[in-house]
Length: 260
Length: 293
Image (cartoon, rainbow over all chains, first blue to last red; front, side, top):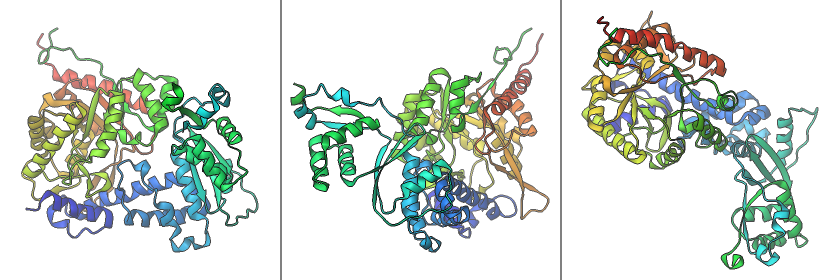
């Protein structure tokens, strides 16, 4: 008698790899149990293919549904999910897709698919009431500079090797210009999503550093210094106003000494 | 007029519906007359906006939580991290029922996104009993186990599915979610008597019924025969409604749910289908009681 672990390994090989031979001896059902085990093999691949296509509609728009489907099928066979929540499956797909031979003509594909992955992730975020710049005016400036802030959970900062945020805007606006030129050029992009709404904002390197430092818990003072390392002319006060105006700031943590 | 057996009179029993993402906002906007909703927690774990809507719905309606990824039958053990995420949601929703499947879907860290079959052996029974106890302890709730839709069996099985389920109930104190469509489908595919299967279940343990759609496809190796495939993509078949009446006559007016996971129709169509359960349940209940006067 096979152990349960052995039985499940054999079925795993059939479901993921289509290797039905080792499972055959342990199964019964109909004249050919293998043809019935194929129901599970088909479901595994079809359901995950559907998940990838649902997650990357803009990438399908960019390279065509056939190319996306072919890449997704190979991705699923090579990298079965390690997560139970299928909405979280596919984070490695952009890099995998970019390595497909047919992708060589689209050098910005990985950047675009990566952007789409994060767009999908943050578009379902929820937000908290935003803190405006006027809410900060009552705080002693020195105390404010040593404070850490909290940004909305639907905010993410990406460094992209191609300016694919422009392409994404085209996709989201459903406009198709007669021609579109794109050149390799590293860009910093803030993706801000809340309850299905989405905003893409191109940032300078210094502003992106400032905001991503804030997001990772740095104080306003430390984030400002990091940004000024990028650009000596960086203006922290103005940058903080812009963060507040964008609605991204939703919390502030003053040090105990400052509160006292 | 005196009704015997349970002493309760036949009731009008409505059915709840599986609540899927496309319908969340509409449910909140229109507040339809639905007895309860059932959700798959795995749909909400990576979707805070949907969770926010679900919690608003849970304030207004009874909600049942039906896990699809707990993988109670995995030889490689339960995924504690996943369970912790599900528990956080369950604690927020505070469901009226909490259920999952007699199946496995993870193996050595891979999630196979399907409900895969188990051999009914002493080894499986011991493993599932241990996992069910761990789930019930972790969630501090009684777990309802759903019978699978089967295309396959195992040469090594030493007990029937009802025997296996009965033993799990006895060992763990869990309850059963009887998916009537799965019984119908499995009986067709595996060649057993569906009513005899229902008769063999411990009736007092059945706490919920499920109804869903399936599709017939040719059984390639057996010309002239069909295999019923559990798709949850069509309306409930006529034969299943008949079996549902029998199930209600056996188990009484337990909560019933209509499931649709593929080709999801508009909310109104789903609600209309759920309302078909009412006359069938009434007929089933009428059969349950012996008219003595």
